[in-house]
Structure formats: C-alpha cells, structure tokens
Image (cartoon, rainbow over all chains, first blue to last red; front, side, top):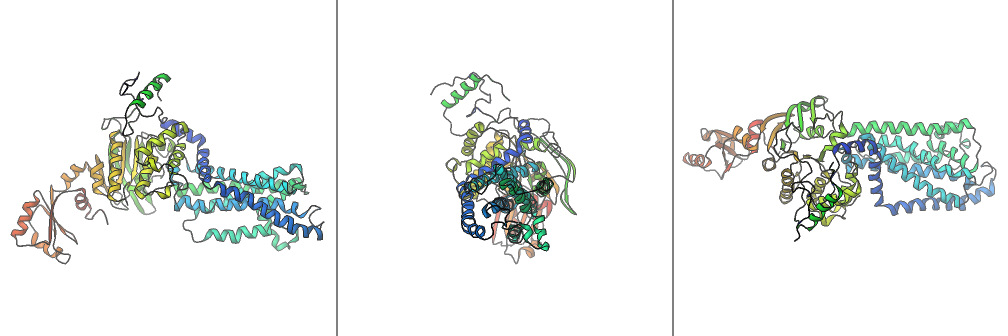
Length: 291
Length: 344
C-alpha cells in the first residue's frame, strides 16, 4: 500500500472519498430562489423520460390518424359538395388549426388532472420538493413550465404533419404553434387550480372530460363555423378557449379574415384565463401544502 | 467553501484512492463536534399550532444544541409531526417563536430548508424515476451541480446499502429499502440537521436495526438528529435527550435514563393473572413495591427489586399465570405521565 501523498493535515475534510462537497446552505437557498422553477421543471421532464416513447408515438400518431381520417376521408366529401362554405379554403385547412388547439387542450387536460392528484395524495410527489429550498410557487411554476415544454414539442410535431398535408398554406402558419400552446394553458391552468383542490377522487376528472372537454371540442367552431350554430348554443364557443385559439390559428394558417380588435380580444381571453388559472393554482397549492 | 489549491485536492484524492475503504466516510466538512456547547441550532418557545379549535401543538418550548440526537416521543396525534413540519419550514405556526440556525422559517423558508435533511413520515419518492435518479433530482432542488451529484449519489447509495439497486425502479424496493432511500435522499445536501418523522414505523425488526445503525453513524458524524417516534426502544437507542409529548404539550424532558429515574422505578414486575382476574387481584397486591398499575392484560408492579417483589407476591399465596421482571423503560414513563400506553 502506498502512503498517501497528502499536502493537507490529516483531520482536514479533504480526506473524504470524494473531492466534492455540497455548497453552503446559503448558496442552495439563493440558487433555489433564482432557478427553483427550472429545478422542478427538470424533475418533471426527467420523469417524462421514462415514458418518452409513448409520448412520441402519441405525438405523431394522433395527428396522422386525425388528418388521414378527416383530411383524406371527410374533407374530400365536404369539399366536393360545399367548397365555398369554409371561406374558400379546403376543409382540411379549415379544421387543422382547431385540431391542433384541441390536441393541446387534451394534453393539458391529462397533465393537469391525475398527475396533480398523484402529487398531493397518491404518491405525494409534491411533498419532497416542498421540504427542499423550493417554494410552493416554484413547484407550480416548474410543473407548468415542464408541461408547457411538452405542449410545445407535441404541438410542433403536430404542425409539421399539418404542413406536410398542405393544410397550412400561409407562411405565418408556424405561429399557430405558440397560439395552440397558449390555448392549452388557457384551459389547463384553471383546471390545475381545480385539480389541486380535489381531496378525494370521486370520478371528478372523467366528469370534466365528458361534460367540459368534449362539449368544448364539439361546439367551439371546430368542425364548422360557430355562426352555423343557433344563437342559444353559440355562447359555448364564446367562453371556450378552444374557439378563441382556433379563430386566431385560422387567421395565421390560411389568412382567415379577422379584424385586428377581435384578434386582440381572442389573445386577451386566452392570456387572462392562463394568468388567472396560474394565480389560483399557486394559491391552492400554497394552502394545501402548507397545512 | 474550501479554497485549497487545486493540486492539494488532487493529492488528497489520489491518496484516498490508494486507501482501502470499507465504509463511506460521512464526516462533514466543518462539522460541529457532538455536544459542543454553543447556541442552539433549533429553538422553540411557546410554539403552537391550532387547526380551528383543535390545538395540535399547544405551547411547547425546547432548545436543541448542535450534534444532539433529540427525540419527540408520544402517541399518534400528540402533535409530533406538526412540530416537525413547523421546524421543517413547511407549516406556519399559530403563535410562539421558532428559529433554526438562528433563522425564522417563516421569513427565511428557503434558507432554513437548505440547512435541513428531511425524512417525512410517509415516503414521497418519485416512483417514475429510478433509485439513483431520485437522489439526483432531489439534489437539483438545492442547485447542486451534476458533477457533484453523480459521485454523491453513489456514495449515499453505498451508505444506504442500495448500491445494487441503483438502477432499479422504486416500485421494486421493499419498505425498508424505500425508507433507506428516503434517508439517503435527505443527505444529498450534506445537512447538519436531519429531521426524521417516525423513521422506522411499519418496518420489520431487521430493517429497523439496519436503519438505526445508519442513523447512529450519522450521529457519530456530528449530524444533529431530531426524530419523532412512538417506539420507546427507538428513543432509548438513538436519543441523547427527549421530550415526552401528549396532546400537544410537553409532559417531561430529559435523557432516557434520567426520565426513567425521575418517573419510574429501577425495575418492573409484570404479572398476568388472565384477563378476568387482573383488576380484581390488584387489591390483594396492594403494598408490594412502590406503585401498582393494573392494566387490562397485566398488572405492573414498580419496585427497586423486582425479584423481591415477586417473592412477596408468592408469599401472599397469589399464583400469576406468568411473571416477568424487567428494567423500567420509557413506556413506563409514558404510562406514568399520561395514564395511557404509547402504542394503541
């Protein structure tokens, strides 16, 4: 055995198996204050890695299935019979922004329901970071940031497939991606606030899917212009983030005519829903975790 | 933190690599020697937490010096976990004062939590991550770089005897392994204060002993341990000093030996006469030993000399089904102070 060639005294902490030490608690705290949101997002993204192939398969599979069925099947029929009904564009171009936005909403609805229940109740994943230097706002923000990145990725893939089908003729079309992500958040963040308050699973989330998500999907001017509906049903579209996101998206992908003020209103509705939802979610998280 | 020249670190590391090593050395940089006098690392004064009318914690005060293993012993619902959550900076107090390393957790939450390692009562590991990744992800919350977290995670897995499970799914671990992983996780930031909320509840005896051994090593390394338990043997094994808590209040405080000395006799004679007769026979046992405690399943006689007390029982012509002479334990202290047993 060779003698250690040390130049430090025997009782010095350098005599550990590893050279590295944790930094001081003060450093942990200040880093957590600055980058805590990212640290939690990192955790969520890492756990997504364990089912990354499922995610990728559904991100590619869903748009392909929808676009083939509706674009090759239904659109051929619709275009043959009523070419003028959809503002002079093909049916596929008409529904593509709506499909994109509703996919974002579906993903957000999945990510902001059961995983939240899991975090509070089943596997109590939120309580780990809660005991660390992270604050509750950062846990919420981090979760939202990670899901936003996931929405961005899956929406971008969806858009590429839409473009490949020739369903986004306008050069501004790519901007529909952030609009769809915002639409997902406008629906998802209020839902996150609701899910964070759910103490017991008594089937609330399937009810949300059945009685909120599905009607919104069908009645938000998704498959036909909202004006086709009688006035007493049109309000569903007006309160639906999907309608606002879809209208904006259409203006971007095929130059659907939208007055500037109305575009602003659509954008504003989405932003307000997302911001209010995030704020509520932070309040509910702080109350529940800090009991 | 340490500003040694690079080559000094390198030399030290080279030297260490050459040394045979059986156990990872968890001696921390700049550690405080156990029981060194100094300002308390945790100080609670008239600490209270009320939920509406219910007083979960009702005006408790204690100080914990650096390096001490301090226990909160009490039955379920005594307010131990609530106290731990307040110390951990995750639950707001209703009134009173509380400082950790001189900081108020409500004003300096992240700073306080950065000092702590926390082992919660219920495991909250991320089961979608592998064993080793649970440690790394947790370390990131402290802003620790991956270059540190990699080797540190391996060191802690070795300490927790989970090296061969590093890439296993958390699902696949036994209860005791999950508990050890949670403890390993709590050490990722090399905390000097470790909060353990019922660390061994629900574990089998062997798993408990492994865990106690690991906790004892941390104590030897100078880590301040704050633990709650409703197991008296755990408190006796691990705690330098403890408080007996019931209904949100401190009933007694001291070292395990001192508490036994103050609130119980040296020995206890346990007699079983059958569940029908235990209470009726108590009258005939009056006068034997210092004190008599009839329980539904047995009669306890507190005496300096248990054998002598047993002889006296026989002399009175009483024939218990079983008899046992044992040393007094914290269970007896608790029984004396609250009139109830600790578990159930």
